[in-house]
Image (cartoon, rainbow, N blue to C red):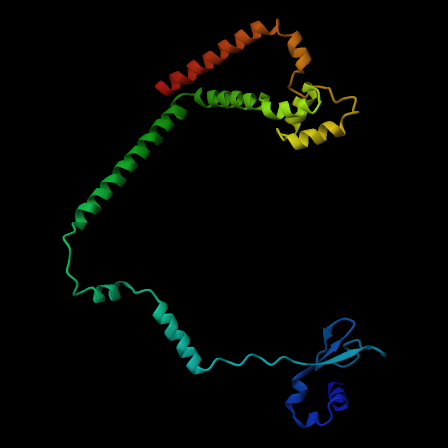
Length: 243
């Protein structure tokens, strides 16, 4: 089929035996290159199918020996010298009185001392965590206290921006906590939930501003107890570090 196409489109081209191999037939609908060793039925070619005769791209010519040698020479010129080349080039240069052994000795002493310090720190940490059974639990409590303080904190500047826009303070605080202190996201949340009946419902684990003011008198003994427990926890941690 390819020979018939070449004979029809390029008269006299079949005189060159390489002309057939330099062209290819492409099925236009499927964009598939037809195989020369298969038949029309095997390639599933039907009547009125469009075939495109295309000349293959010539492979790039291999580089000439002169170009290869020039490239290798350029790479050798740009290559960094090795130790032998440096010693050979600096053989006749005058030597300076540099005590290399002393500098190396000082560096070795520094590495030794640093290693001793690291080993001592590891030993102290091991005693702190292994010999005291309450150390791990106390660290967990301390981290929980820090995380709780971080969750309860509200950005005053962001809160002021929202209240100046006319949003109630309690809703603004809730929106800031839900949006991780992002003023833009908090404002969008407030606008979307303006008509939501549950917009003033407190978040889990948080006390609303109104009820917090009413329970201020009842919270005094609890605050004292919380402060005393925090002091006890601090004393326990201090004792561990002393040991």
